[in-house]
Amino acid sequence: MIQGALSVRQSVRARRIAAVLIGAAVVVIAAALFAYDPAEGNALPGCVFHGLTGLYCPGCGSCRALHQLLNGHLGAALGMNPLMVLALPFLGVYFLLYAVAAIRRKPWLGVSMKAIWIRAILCLVIAHGVLRNIPFEPFSWLAP
Image 1: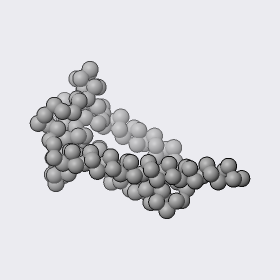
Image 2: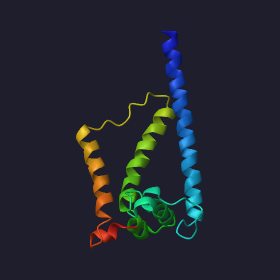
Image 3: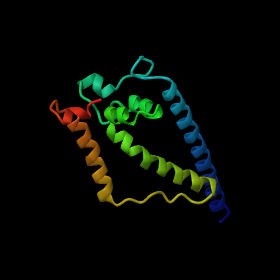
Image 4: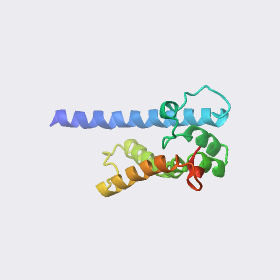
């Protein structure tokens, strides 16, 4: 019984540390992307998938989109990677729920999703990756 209580406490502590580290990483990355425009320099590595195939992956343009979003240019961000921009609020809420549970020392139950929603999201990401590589309008608008 005592062993189980210790492992629960250690798990809660590990989650609290993870929440703080993830939050700090998000702040540091956001500050760097706010100040540095990835389109103007080569400090960040390019997309490996794009480099090998010449095709855009679903994540291509995400750094440039985040830079534009952090500088208040929603339209430009949507032009770089609309899927990432639209996913940010959901990711933010997910992390916020995780952090609140960790701070309150409550067990993390996660956000339960039915398998159909997970498959739908996966299909959306794959479709985004395929459609943005079609060289005809309106699909070419999805390219970064």
